[in-house]
Length: 110
Length: 116
Image (tube, rainbow over the protein chains, first blue to last red):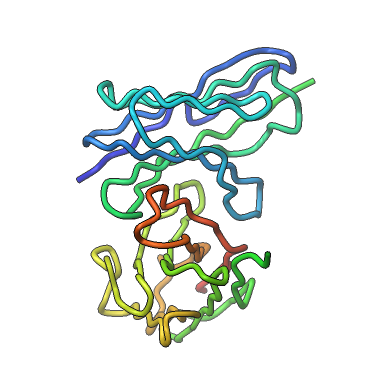
C-alpha cells in the first residue's frame, strides 16, 4: 500500500523567510502533484511533476521531484501572507489513482 | 471554461438516512473522480470513472456507497444508509483523458456532509 508522508504538518513562518515542505512516498512513482487548499475551499493544482529531476516554479513556490529518493520538495521563497494555506502532495501510481498526504498547513505571519 | 460543478454544497442528514451528490465535470474530460476528505486529512479516492466505466473503486465502501456515471458525463454518488463517520467533504474532480500523461485533476467546490 502506498504511503505518502508530508512534513511538517504545521508550519508558522515570518514574512520574508524561506522554508521547505517535504513529501516522502513509499512506492516507486514518477508522477507527483502539489495542490493548494484555502480554508473551506476546494483544491487548486499548483504543480505536476512527471519525471526524475523535474523542477517547476511559479512565483515564490518551487517544486522538485527525486524519484530515486522518493522525495518531493516544495520550497517557499520570501514568504508572503497570501501563501497561507494547506498544501498537499499527491502521488500517482496508476493512471490517475492518486494517494494524498495529510497536508501541511502554512501560516505566514507579518 | 466552466469548472467542475457540484451540488448540493452543504447537506445535513441524520444517521441511517440516504443522501446523493451530483457532479458535472469539465466539458470534454473523460475521467471523473470522487474523493472523501475528512477534516484534517488529505482527500481519499473513492471511485474513478473513465467515460462511463469504472477504473478503480477499491476504496469505495460498497455496502453503503454507490456511484454511477451515465452517458459518460455527469455522475452521482449515493450513501445509503449514512453513518456518523461519513461526515466529510465529498470532492469531485475530472481530468482531460486517460491517455493524457499528466492526469492533472481539476476539483469542484465539494459537498460538505454532516451526519447527526
